[in-house]
Length: 155
Image (tube, rainbow, N blue to C red; front, side, top):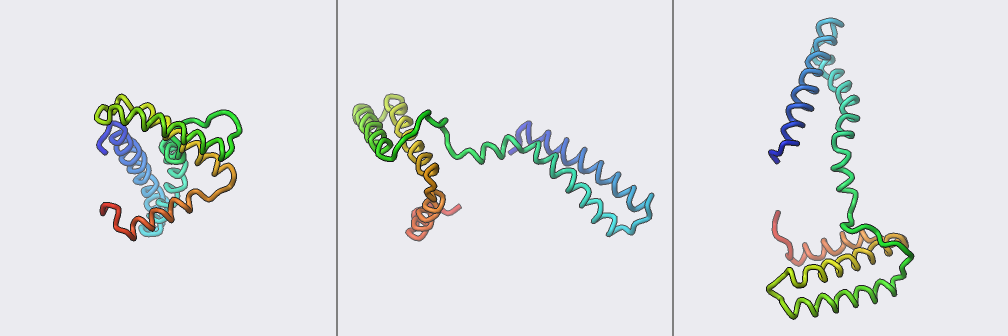
């Protein structure tokens, strides 16, 4: 939480920009234009919200893009069928199982095969999404079922 980026955001965005801008706008509305304190404050907040909507959108753009990206791997070129993906997952699983069985305690010996398997599963999810399948709804259903079974740790 207390990273360099956090300090820049808190000091730069909140204290300097919002704090000083808010104080100046409040001064103009209340003292110079004679607007009563509460309406001046509400108008001040509205003006700041309109401005900082774009400022915050710019600041957090790269963070929001990361959240939007649900896949770890880039999409593989080509058109893939679900049958092809099933076979690919089977192949990758066989390679992972063989590598894991040979050295279960040494994750460096089987990590690559495990991530290849993960990539194949992820690609299958992409194919399903491209076909219009409601993958997110199924994720939700699974989470709800597992919660009902008490499988998750309490947050």
